[in-house]
Image 1 (cartoon, rainbow, N blue to C red):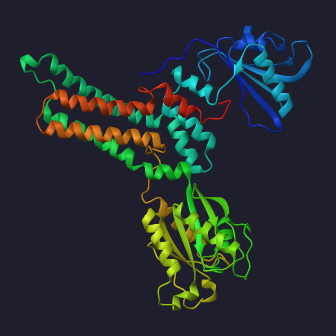
Image 2: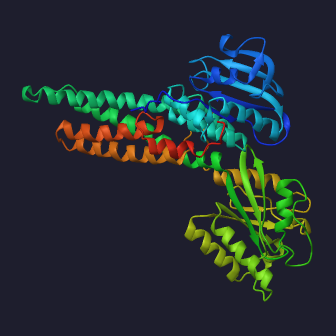
Image 3: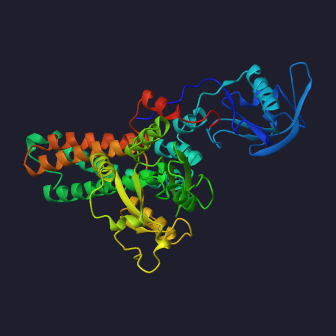
Length: 463
C-alpha cells in the first residue's frame, strides 16, 4: 500500500549547492507556500494571486521592510508541481549570506526547514513518482559517468516501473484465479488451467531472472569500478596511472620506492567510471614508511573490483615463481577480485614484444609512449562488463531492488514447485502473493515509513 501524506506543514530549503554563483534557488512547498512567500516578496502582484507556472520579478524584504535582495519568484499551483503541492521557487543572487537570509525569511514567515529528500518524498507520497523513480532522482544527482546518467534517466522515466508492473499484473491475475477457486472449492471448479498457469508462471520467473542478471552491469553503471594498480617498484605503476588519466597526476621517478602512499583518481572510459588507485611498490623492505605503503597497497587490492598487476616486460625471462605475485593472486582469488596482468615497457623490446591478445586478462603496453593503452582501456570495460546490455534494456542498479527481486524469485520458484507437485491452489496462491509483495516493494506499492525514511535520508536537503 502507499503511505499517504499528512495534510500538514509547509517546508522550505535551498535547492542549489552552497557557495558563490550566479543565482541560488530557495524552494517552498506546501498548503501555505504562497502565503509564506507573500510575507517577504514584494512585486507587482501578490504571488497567491498570480497564475500557475509564471515568473515574477520583485524584491525580498524583511519584517521591518528592509531590502534584502532582488529576486525572481516562480509559482507552481497544485497539483501541477514537483511535489503536487503549491510551490514557490525564489531565485536570488548566488551567495551564502544572501541565500541564508532569504531562507530564514521563509522560515520566519511560517515554513519549516525541509528534511533531506523531503520534496521528493512528498512527490512520491502524492503519487507523482513511484518509489523506484524517486530513487532515480537521487541517482541522477549523484551520477558521475555517462552510463550512470543514462541508467538513472531510464529509471526516472519509468522503464523499470513499467516492467515491474507488467509482471505484477500477470501474477495478480494468476493469484486471483487461484483464490477464486477457493470460493467454489465444494463445487470442485477449476478457473486456472494448470498447464497454462505453469507456462505463465515460468514466463514471469524468466523476466525476474533477466532483471536480476542485469544487476552486475547496473552496479558498475551506478557505482563505478575500483581498480588498484599494483606491482613491484619501478614496474611503471605511476606511469600507467598517468597514461590512463591522460595527465601527469603521479610523480614518476627511476628511483625505486617513490610512491609511498596511495594516489586515487577517477576516469571515464566508454561511459563507465573507473576509480584508479596507484599504490606503493610491493617488495620486502626495512623502511618503516615504505613498509606502511606496502600494507596500504595490499589493503587497497583486497577492497578492489579489479587489480592491475603491472610487471616489467624484462621479467618474461624469469621462469620461477614469485612469492609477491603469488600472494596477490591468492588475495584476489579468495575475494573474487578480477586479476589482470599488464606487461609494461614493451617499447624497450620493439622486435619481440607481442601484440595484445583477445583474452582480456593479459595486456602489453608502454606507459611511456602510450602504446597499447587504448587496448587496455577497452579491455577493462570488457572485464567488468561481461555481457553487453542493449540500449533499450532495463538495467537494475539499486541493491534494494536486487534484494526484492531475489525474494520474489524465491517465492515464485516455490509457487512453481508447489504447482507441479499437484498441491492445492491455495498453497500456490500463498507463494504467488509473497512474490507479488516483494515486487511491490520496488515501486512502493508495498512499503513502510521506516523504509521511506531510510531511502530519503540519503538525499540532499532541497531535493
